Image (cartoon, rainbow, N blue to C red):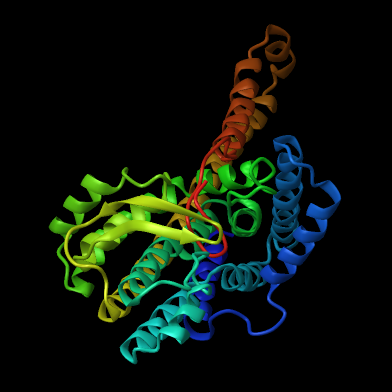
Length: 381
């Protein structure tokens, strides 16, 4: 089924690139409604309740993905369609690029009221006092981080784990946006969701940074300069992941990101990332271009990972089958009874079992712990 998973990932990415988010009845919105109802039932201002909430809300979609994978086992066309639909549902690349270009048009027209009203489509900052450079900076930072959160990360987990990876990642990321920010209500309850999201994005955020370096010439940058800025500034950000993406974007665009961020009721001062001026509308269009190129490359990588994953599983299965076949051939020999009594067959059977256990262990990629940053509807933890 590896080819079906790979084809589904590519098809889903293309659907998102062409159609964007579903206009009505978006499954992620439906999940958010269900998660909100669950929160009302289990909420308490402590970490244990938050951990239960996170486990149930992420475990449900993961089990749904496992059920879908089981139902389409041996039916590659159905699997490809299901993976394509799930991938389209969980990605947000086209919408992200669209919002960046819309913001650029508002700023080009000096329409600050419209630009301020649009910012909350991208992040949770208070736009009421932001001027053009600060609105542009907030947009570039959000595009950089969400290229990982909404594009690269779901593709990576889809490549690694298929349907369960796609759905579980999107559930975890949605919970982070809902409860993973600092506030009186979620200071303890949201910790598990925030840390799980950070853990799941550790690898995708770094891959996003590296891919941004590779495609930086599309924005007028150079890989060497972008790499220099990324290596210097990526760990200065309070988030373990956002700095990986934002520093690479700053280097590719030759701008300076960071500074004072004002959220509703609080403010934070972030370290500066990159060298050069603050972003302007032209940089928003270039950031969208980079985001699109990074997403397309990530889709190809994810498809490749799915093929490798399927090939490895087939090789393990083939080895186990060949060993079982040799054992059966040996068992047909005239001296089978003597061989069994002497224990001659025991090592052979034990090896086949160890191969099976090794395969199960190799495919167990469950994460264990993590931390978080600034994205739509949430602040730094």
